[in-house]
Length: 253
Image: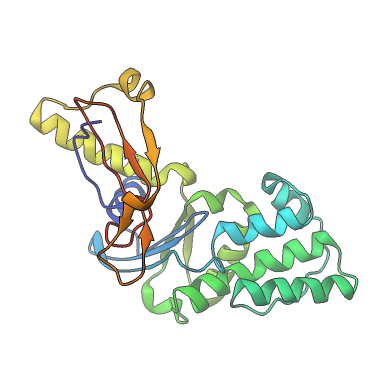
């Protein structure tokens, strides 16, 4: 599609958060399948933690629990806020959390209480189990929460409570367009580059929407760079512009 800019995802999230909130200390992006925590210093990324191999602290965990009760994830917070108490889940692996769920159900806890309990353990999973940052106070006092999981107000409340209990004087903000934060950052960088160059290579929205491609996944797409045989999905567009895009091979990710 002849994109004008290649933007690293962490940088896109940083640009978006800084645009809306100025000088921040920590940016916590929790998506459906991964977690990115950016540690800021002097307006730039000093360090970061990324996890995309464990579902213990991301939106998929909440989605799976909602599915267990036949509940749309959009109703998660509304349901969880009806609970008057919540069981204490052990933070850690999602498999163990599901074992806790089964045991708590046998003990008579309602779905409202179980959903509330899981939301409360989410911050521990994010900061202690996945990101492994137990002392939040050392990171600063201004936190921004973004990513699609932050649409879940039960998850947001749990995170705000967790941070404020551990960081005296903490300021915790939720991005106003939390699910689109990274896209906004990428758009900002694109606008900056295109404004400077006075031209764009982008083929246009109409052409992008009308884009045709085929997907191939067979013996010809096996990656031989690894000792294990890994198949890649190859997406091709017709000539004259052809896109070969492997999506599931670690060599390319």
